[in-house]
Image (cartoon, rainbow, N blue to C red):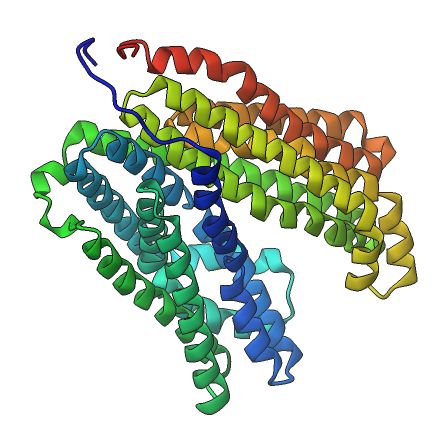
Length: 447
């Protein structure tokens, strides 16, 4: 960039941050509902193997699809920068490129459905009856892959524009459509697991249609972008690079959480169940912290696009402040009321007692992880994705080292390793962001 680039001011206030964060918090809460709706409707049929198949299907698709959740984060960050720069045509170009990547990736997943099934199904360890039903569910729902990934892109585009309210609207619409379609196909037409898969897939298709209409109402038309602009080599390479970095980051995160569950399972059923109960305390806090991360992504991305260093630094301070304070509040509430939560979730006296022994570790996770959540949004909005990727891999390595060093401590060592993983990410990002900020605004005019 040249030194003559001018800057604009981006409104960065407490109220704007909260206005961006709250709708996305509600949106994140709805994310698990696609699988939950299927499980609830199928559960009414009273067949255990069908319920197990749908539950496992939700897990498989969560892993497969969320590996490409980078499409949402990358699109949001790049769109926010184009919005901040006052360049609506670049917003459309960003959207068009991301949709192309999403559609091609979705088609690739369809082509690879048999290898994916061959790897995923044995890992579930399910019975033959469950696997047969899972196969039906999987090989139907996988055809919605291009639409599911396109919905990630559309959601990211609305977020980058600062319209998180529309992102919430789209998520709610998809879930309502899923509830209606799945209920009709399963309970009225008696299509069982196939009906659940068709209903969920159709809801994703409808979501894309509604999303395109919403974007058109915002004045955006990605289909009007010339192919020469969509396929611009430098721009497409940047899109792919940013998505690649965030994808690696997402997979590393899933490996960390998957290892936590697997290590708990090795310690016995009681440990596995108690850890699952306690981990929900972290997930609940995470839904709210994700909202602040989304707000940070939007505000930081728009500030960079506008070359507004003052607004960028204020966005960092506000998002970090709100995240850390909220994380602390959730940790205190979890510690004080965690016993009641444990009793509500589990009726087993053994699980209740065991979970209480480790409540303090679970209660600390929202506070220890708060900075990492906020910085994830900051780094994604700034498209510092290489640093985000490398710091995540560093934290994963620290996680593994602590597990090896404290393996003799059993479940205590496992929880300590998780806290180290969360804390390492936040500390690493905090140490690096000042240097990245100076580099980003090196050529900006100071106003």
